[in-house]
Image: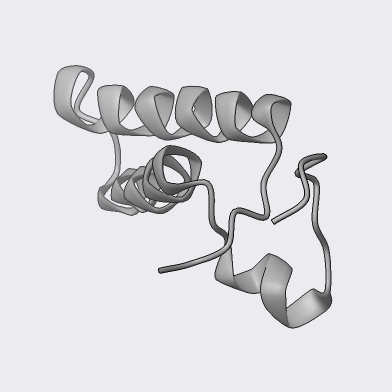
Amino acid sequence: MFKTNTGNIDRIVRVVIGLALLGWYFFADGPIWALIGIVPLATGALGFCGLYTLLGINTCKLKN
């Protein structure tokens, strides 16, 4: 479907940030904007970032 354009470290960082933001919202009564954590969580899980495609960035070392 989509070509992977995020590397392993990039994906791990995205998942951690996404989980931290969502955890802050759900468990510590964080602000509503903390739900933006869904975006890095999804892009980290899928391995695809649409913004990277628009900017021509590819942190994945594997050839597609």
